[in-house]
Image (tube, rainbow, N blue to C red; front, side, top):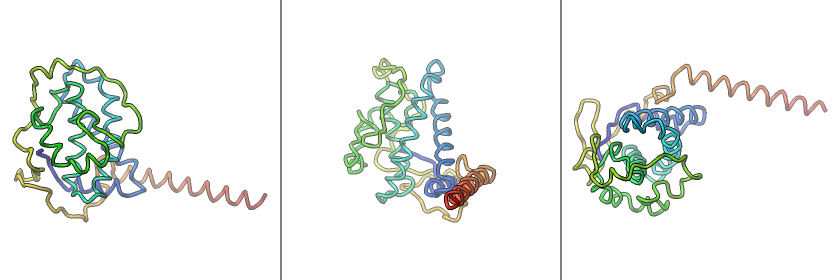
Length: 218
């Protein structure tokens, strides 16, 4: 699969691994992916898929983090989550939203078969053991599978993860990025959001201290 990879992807990964901003980053990534993929959906069906996509992408954040823990680099871990989404789109007949052609699904699955098998993920069951419950229902369009239309899919990238850098250069495999990028550059995480989260944490700590003092006085 062909993916873009910028410093912002590193910032988002770091934010997801940082307790203070983890939830903010997660919400930001879910909103971003839902918005992007709704933009590729048939306009007549886009809104009815909104809740489904929100729930789907929320679960794939857990997959992404687990793939990183399993030793996959950032690009490969992200590709795994994009494949989960594409499996789901395929199962619903949402072929216009797919990033890869239907006839490349098996080849993409096979490259990550060890990870997918370990977590019970199949094309028919894209979330496997990561699922926390059924996703919100959204109408399928199975007729599209008879003659798949893939206006947003790019064929020919099934043998590896291909990364397009900010300059448009296409590289095979993930590339090494600057780890010094601040978490405030992550999707959904800015200085203002970070201050808001820190303020909530400070209020919570103050409440806990007050409660402790009250308990000691009893």
